[in-house]
Each structure stands twice: as C-alpha cells, then as structure tokens.
Length: 480
Image (tube, rainbow, N blue to C red; front, side, top):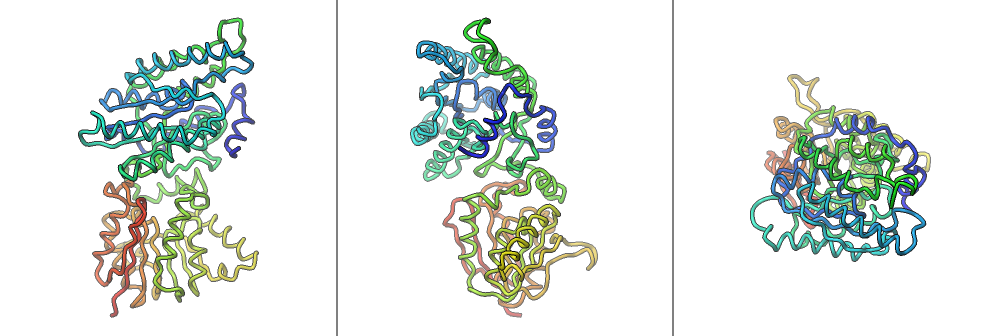
C-alpha cells in the first residue's frame, strides 16, 4: 500500500478533512490550465461519479468546445457500500452505471464506456485497464476525431490520490500513454485529484505544484458539473432508501469537491502556458513543496541524471559550475567527477534542502561532498558589473540542467555569452532540457538549446536525442 493510501485510510470520509478554503487559496496561485487545444480526450476513472467529482467542469468545458471525448469507467462501483449481499451489489452497480450515463448527458459528453471490472483491487487488473485506455486513444487517432489540429490527452486520476483503485487507474493510464507515444508521440497525460482534497493539504509536499494548473470554468461548465453531481443519488443519499443510514458521500465531502476549483497535474509535456520568468514563481513552487520537480524520487529524473553524467566527455574535471542546482541531487553526482563544484540557486528553500543533503553526505564521510560550494544566486544581466551575475571564471565544465527556460528571453543570449566568455578555453558545456512545451517556451524547453548552439565561441560536439522527453547537447568552448 502506498503512503498516500495509508494516509487516506487514516482519514475516513466521516471526518471533516481539509477545509475547502485551504485548497481554494492554493489553487488561486496556479497558472491557468489551457484546454483550448485539447481536441481528443480520453477520460479514465475508477468508479462511476469520479469523472464528475474530479473533472466534471473540465469535461463540460471540453464538450462545449466541441472536443471529442471518450470516458472509460473501469469498475462497476458495487463495493461502495460495505456489507451488501450479491443481489444488492448487482442492483447498486446497475444504478451507478445509469447515474454516470445520465451525468454524461448533463455534462454534454457521450455515454461512457464501462469496463465492468470488480470494485476494489483494480491493481490486479492494471494491464487490462492500460490496454483499454490505449485502445481508446487509438480510436480517437484513427476515427473521425483524427482529423484537424489539436492535442490528444488522457485525463485520469492522480497516482497519489490515496484511493488504491484511483492510483491503479492512474498508473495504468500512464503506461497506456507511454505505449501510445511510440506511434503518437505527442499524446499527453493529465491527472486530477479527488480524495487527496480530503486527506492531504497543499503544504504536505506530496503535490508536484511545479506541474499543476487551475481550470478556469465559466458559469455554464460549473453549473453542469453541479447538476451532474446531484445525479448520483446512490452516493449522495442513503441507499437504497432513507432508512439505510448515512450516505456513502457525506454532504461536506461533496461540497468540498464542488467548491474547490478544479486543478490538474500536468505530467507528460502539458505545461501551463504562462510566463515563468520571475523569482517569485520559483519561490512559490518551493513554498508548497520542498522538491517540486521530484528530483529525489522520479524515475524520469533518475534516468535523465544518468544520461547527463554519461554525456560528460571527460571522466574528471577541475572545476564544475552548475547554475540552478535546485535541491542538489545532480550536484552531488557532479562532485564525484570534479575536484571542485560551485552550484547556484536563487531560492533559499531549494538551497536549504541542498545543504541538508550535502551535510548528510559529509557526516557519512563522503569526501566528494566536501568539494561543494552552494551559493544563493541567479544568472542575471544588469546595468553595471555589480548587478550582472554570469557565473564564476575558469570553469572547465558547466552543466545547464532544466534551468535555461527560467531565464527571461531578453536576457538568455547575453547570459549564455557571458558563461562562454568566463569559461576556460576547451571547457565543456552540457545542456539538458525537457523537449516538450513549457511555460514561456511553447516550442519546448529544448528550444533554449537553439539559443545555446548559436552562442559565439562554442563548438557543438554531440547531441543525445534518444529520449522522447529530454534532449542533451554537449558543446566545447573554443580556444582563445
């Protein structure tokens, strides 16, 4: 059982849960979720009503925009009420299916596809679920919806939502997207919370806020979601009649799911289309999560880190400079390859976490960690020498990892020129960035590499484009 599932189990729906205003305030700080380009959307959820409670407003908005939508409801939902006999479970499953069908009409969406898997234990069926989701995407890509511009999106549960069935469907959807990307590389994965709004809080450090965005719903979409939620009488009222005790979904739980603005976690390359050229943006991310890019836990980050280290042309360097070091995960690995490492980051919370990591390594006797210097500083240009920070002089290795797109466009060329001028002749500059659209760089984070490769005084040595998600370029500073 995941940590999030344990925490969900320890916070029953009968308990008050997190105040809706707490989530509303956190969501207010998020960039807007731009769904205007979503042309083909497969919605995958664990139970009848999850599609409405988690993303009903987004679905209504997409339907009004004319997007092609296919909703896949994985389980029959017969296990919502404990202690039912087989006949009652069958009756409940039938009623919940009917409710989701009527709710889809309210949202303006097509009738869902019901897989009919047993409620509970969906982790035992993840491959089948993944196949069904992938098939849904392929139908979108080969049917009438294939024509025209626009994006293909899988909208599903967040993998840390707490409910084991929700997390299983989220994992299955992620696997489906990876499979589909072999032939449709621009398919996106976007996930939403349901039960995390009950048991989690914005400051607990679980939500990857750096990849989150808030849906802006017009009154019509919000009204459709509210009316669709009322359809689920089997969950919102005593079932099968008023003598049956409390409803499965207490009123305060439903109210929270209707009050809190819908927001989504943008896995894949769906990123908020909003400028992030500000210190305040970064500080806001770290105020909500000590590791907003999941550098410590993400398999993607681990793979990218290994590829970055493998791309270094030399085994050993004299002086490495890493601007934008974040919490210092890659930094410590670079310390194993250099006699000295200087790493910068402009955010105090990021550096505090990096210092904790380095100190722990030093206490464990790691001599490499002792070669590290961490500095609170950002690469900037200014009107005078004091306001200009272009890095230390004499580095023979500069590593630019997922940080160039945080530099204002107007300053990027000057900053890269300054880095090259301060580097030792023959130094290597290694850049690695997300290939897909990011805030401020709709052509993809790796578009910053085009600016890098055009910088005077650099020779391009090689490119590693093996990953569909990140790009690595290695350059050398020309002799002077």
